[in-house]
Image 1 (cartoon, rainbow, N blue to C red):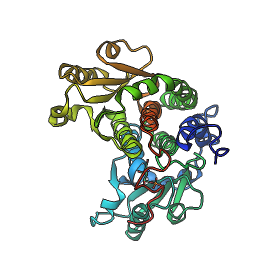
Image 2 (image 1 turned 135 degrees about the vertical axis):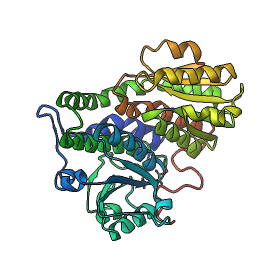
Image 3 (image 1 turned 45 degrees about the vertical axis):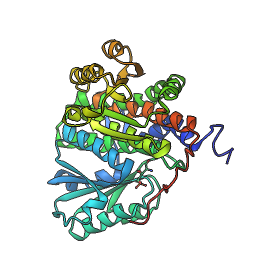
Image 4 (image 1 turned 30 degrees about the vertical axis):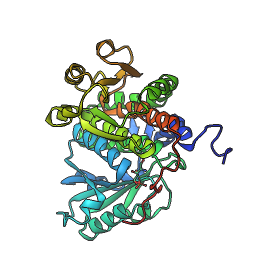
Length: 369
Ligand code: AGP
């Protein structure tokens, strides 16, 4: 097992560090920047289904559901296709309205999650077209889908999902970009710009990983608190949910993720000098609005950990700590902002002596409902 961990203390840490390669492997052969095209057989062969779709329904669980939420922003923003994101476990029992003109995208690392598989069967029985985004080749969900695209993350052993999340976002971004081009909702220069920015993500993830030692120090300061709040807006709202899930899973500290602007509708009551609040405040994502949320937190003495764009000054002045990530497009920023949140939860769990790779009560894939 020591050998399999490749010199890292835990699979989770290894998998966090594998993300530059995993993301590159996922777009390799699909993103052809010189020719300015995206090539994905599963999308190409079913282009009519996608273009004629009334809407896209995304079903998933846990972290994969968070990737689905990011995808909702990308598909609506770039491809102008209405999207609904559903917990598979709710969707399958809700007697949902599904028609032949719906496209259902099922996202699953393992491809074995029972609720997601059942949601696929239900959608197929109503005539919807089902597209699977899985990591495990030949898995049940991959086999049950009408078509699909694999993430090329490689085996993910740690129960807490890391590289599966970022590679899911990579695949979903490629699909959204391909459909945007086909629909003409993106200009050719914007399309090229997106391809270029996506190709630069692995290098930028490497850069983000360099904050590891700094994040470990922050983890040490807050490891004994009982509650954490995570806030983000737009593309980074799902990242806030994912950051909170990571912390809960492996450190057993209660954490909640919220859209930043929802804070004043409830969670603000929790804020005092004992409450650390992780706020994703990157430059392009409603920055000024998030800064004003940070000011509200500060006036209530909450401890602010800001995830900011390199060179940020404004949040640095207000926050107790900042963690920098390189600048990117708003739509691609989740691939970067999620990195420090993975590392923060990892270091807190290690400092608390928890079983990082196999947290209590959790299984890597949930094959029973
Ligand atoms: C993530 O850290 C979790 N362990 C869990 O939420 C997971 O993402 C969920 O069970 C879905 O699994 P899947 O992607 O294999 O379907």
